[in-house]
Structures are given as C-alpha cells and as structure tokens.
Length: 456
Image (cartoon, rainbow, N blue to C red; front, side):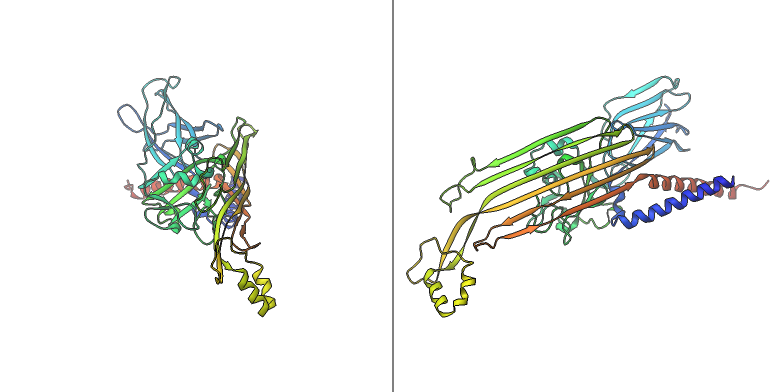
C-alpha cells in the first residue's frame, strides 16, 4: 500500500513538472483547446431511461487510436481533447445490443452532444449506424465554420494560400494594406487571432496577421498540403481564445497514418495570356513556378507516425515604375558647381519621356523585375503511448524573400525573413487532470450525501 502511494505521488509530481515545463515552453498555452474537439454523449434504453456503466470506445479510423469511457450515473460520457479526424463510436451494455456509429467527423474547437438509444437484446448482437449526420453544437454558443482537407486542397485558391478560403465565412473580408488574412465581424486585422495546433501562429510580431511584415510570403503559416482542416470561430467567442475580438482562425496540421500517402504539385504562370499595361509598349515579363510535395506514413503502425511537406516558389515579375528625375542639363550644372554631387546623381536614371527645352526634371518610365522566393518546410510527428496519451510535435520553417523595384539604380527595396515555429502537445497530462477533477467531484458529492444522511 505504501509502495502504491509513493508511485502515485511520484506520478503526480512528474505530471506537475511536465505541466510547468510545457507552460514555459509554450507561450500561448491558453490556446491549447483550440486544436481539439469535445464529444458529449448520453446512453439510454428504448424508454429513454439513462443507462450507467455502458462501455464506450471512440476509435480513430486512420490511426486506430482508441479512447475508452464508461457512462456515469446520468448515462453521460465525455471525450475531451479529441484530435480532429474521422471516428467510430462503439457502445456496449449487458442486456442490450451493442451500437456502432461510423464516420463521425470531429473538428478543432468543436463541442458536440449526441444521444444514443440502445435496443434490447444480447451484447453479441449489434446495430450499425451508417452515414452519420453532421454533429450540431448544443453545448456552447460560438459560431464555428470548418473547412475539411478536400475543400482546402481542391478549391481554386490564389497562390495556394489557405487564407483565401476564409472569405466564404459570413462576416469575413480580406485584410487590406500590408497585412494578409481576414477581418471578421467588422473588426480590424488585430481582432482576428491565428493558431496552429493550438499555439499562436501570427507571423507578424507587430500585428495579428498570418503573414510577416510587408507580406513578402505567399505561404502563410503552412502549406495547404499539410493542413488537415481550417476552422473559423466567431460570434460569442469562448474564453480560451484569449484576445480574439473579431474571430479566431484555427489550423490543424496533418498527421501520418497507418497508410503511406503523398502528393506532388506544380503551379506555373507566365505572361502569355496577360494583357499589356497601357503605359508600356510590350507585355511585362512574368515567370512564376510553385512546386513541392508531401509524404506521410507510419514509422511503427498504430504507434509512431510522421508527415512532412515541402513547398517552394520562384517568381520574377516586371513591375511598372515611374518618377521624375533630373534632366541632363541640370546634372551638368550641379556637377559643375559641386563635383561631389555625382555620387547622389548617379542613383537617378535619365528621363526617357519627352521633356521641355528648359525643364529641370523629366519623367522616367520602365518595367523593372521584382522577385519572390521561398523554401517552406512543415513536419509533424505523433507518438501514441496508449489509448489516452499522445505526443505531437510540429515544426514549420520558411525563408521568404521579396524585392520591390524602384526608379533608382541599384536601390530596390527588399525583405529577407526566417520563420521558425515549434509546437509540442502532450495530451496525457490533460486527460489525467480531467480524470482527477472528475474523481474529486464524485468524491465531494459522495461526502456531501453522507453529511446529509440522517442519524439512526
């Protein structure tokens, strides 16, 4: 008995230490619930009387990870911190036919409640429910719009950027200016929060935006090849989303499964079908190539999974530039007066449009090449320790580069960035804390009942 107490104490101490470590390593720990779902259910008999003691299992159809619960005295069960995916629910109780519901889709941030009625019969008999309807949120009041992988991947999104799909959400409009992303519910850019696998995913340290400063990157946060789902939360936003005033956008990255799968893609554009700018005598040059692929699968089936994505792009596009520059006569006069002005004057081109005989400045018009490049990597590893414990590590890296041409010679504006993001999620502690809270609540309820019992 003493040995068991010591083991429990060491386990509690280890859990507390892990919680502190994760809190220190994860700045936005408050967003942890944004990347998982909560599934509530009630088990009843044909007369709608609740059934306690029913064995309930929830199985991920891709990784075969199994979660188990037992319905309580009110017939209820709760699966918390459920990773997004497609699940099969199985319910068994002595004296009743077992029930199996397949194809249950769970999304990030989803709160769902379903009632299940068991039929009288032997446990060996089973009732299978096919084509399960979409789960309706009857637990909380926020508005949730979820985009599944097929929608994100197949819809024609400009530059393969997932933020373009968010304009399908009622009340969302594209951000303007130097920011990317969307404004939601009439609130500006800073009112929309962004998260990836439950951690802060803003790429701009000066604003809440999925892109970096001056938006040089075409890949916001991560490649669409690595996105499992995109969800937007608005309306009455739950407290766990912290500073989200207008809305919250959650990204869930793909995980490897028991099957090896991958993809390859190439996106090419050129000037062949472009129209000529009215201010130029010929079509502006354009060459754009966006390419990459993904690969995922098991390292050890049902236990360890990996998934990785690479996406790169190379863009060279001529931009129209114009401005007033000193004429040759003015240059000559300035250099005659102050020869040291040559360093400054050499930065200006000569006018290439007609000028007056006594003009001091003339118009320079040209098409100069601007460039964008990036090599973006996404990787995710999952380890399933047991039915209720999962470790997920996600790493994202990008190196977007952009040049914007100007009228000056050898003085184009450019931005160079290096983006690195690491997310570590451990569901085991969360599950253990929930079970501990539930046991304490049950114990306190039992003690209160004992205190009210009459003395004989």
